[in-house]
Image 1 (tube, rainbow, N blue to C red):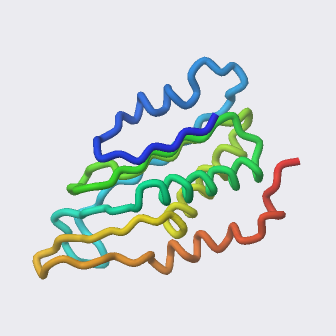
Image 2 (spheres, one colour; image 1 turned 30 degrees about the vertical axis):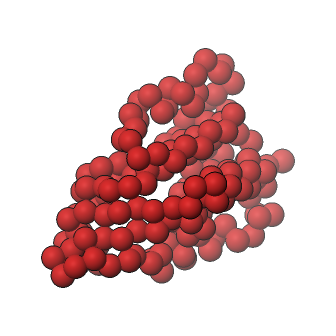
Length: 158
């Protein structure tokens, strides 16, 4: 099961988890990550953020990332929910959920998905600060984290 949603509305974490594993008796592990908007970025206070995307293109890119994860690990499900629009500090931005029969595959997949989303998904962030608005680029730390997944043969399922 693969589910990808792009939305402006807040999401309910417990409802997203339940939708992911449902009544599947094969699920032995559920791993999730929820990214929240911070009020500070690179030492600068952030009052608000606008997150933009290209409809259609973004879903296609997220689908390709999810397909890559499914080819690498033995999974029961992937659920990605990403918000767009105006976000305030503490607002949830992204939900990444993975189910598998075993925890190792679920943890690795969840990490791979968020690292890939941070660097490969076509989202654009514009922060509002006391000094004005600024576009945010991918951080070097995010690029380095995503780089560890570059060898697709290293993590393939048997």
